[in-house]
Image (cartoon, rainbow, N blue to C red; front, side, top):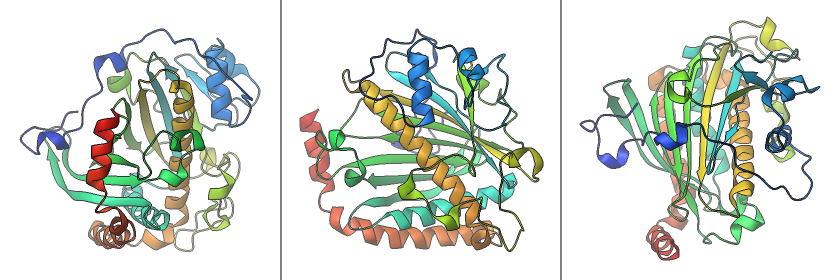
Length: 356
């Protein structure tokens, strides 16, 4: 899965997961402080850390996950996530069912990412697009390479803001060979922190439990299906116009999703995501893992809801149309973000090196 050295400079090549990330290793002891109630995924991580087996979790009433192999899917038919912890690594799998087909979502995804980035960028924070150009890989064929800087200091929890620079950004690199993509997040200020996400798209309702066997063959896996209609999202992100339970498309007639919609609606596709979080800092590790997995889950949930709720805006677009829309949105978004940060990037990197 490594892009060819002939196709791009070495800095543009996605790093494959080191062997130690894929090798099975005993889960480390974890300590938990404070109230462990809250988000269902956080509760599940706590249960796993206290020795609950995946099978036991699958048998728990209202459980949101099922174990692989040998686990029984929940009766409610929802969810999508596989969780495993090793000394410095947390792996998770997220499946997002969509009332779309693969070829439709390819355009909807690009439209959603561009519009969402523009909406979330304001007053010097948000997404700056550094690079967006065609890319060719010998194994995956033609694709698109994108590099972005995500400025998000004000969105960090107070304990994180206390240890990062005032102007703080994360670098995102993405290689899009739809229906397969690789996305990496790194931070020069935190060299021992990274997020690696591999995504595959298929026209099914999340039934392919072996989709990542080549990439994660040795990992213990637990699967949760994320229901874009019925699973909760943070209240601050909720918009009724983007709620699949209330939205109905004028162009496709799709919408007004109810409990169990995945079993009865066609066409349907699934976005499979394998997420690996690496953070090699003792003391903050558990807190950062929990925070990162919650943020990843929430952002992906919001994005998939928006791609569905905005279907009437992009449904008639061709690939050329959405690429032109993407280009225009990137230019507008960069104006909102870059003016404040263009003179500070070197200062940030210099500060990061000295802090490291």
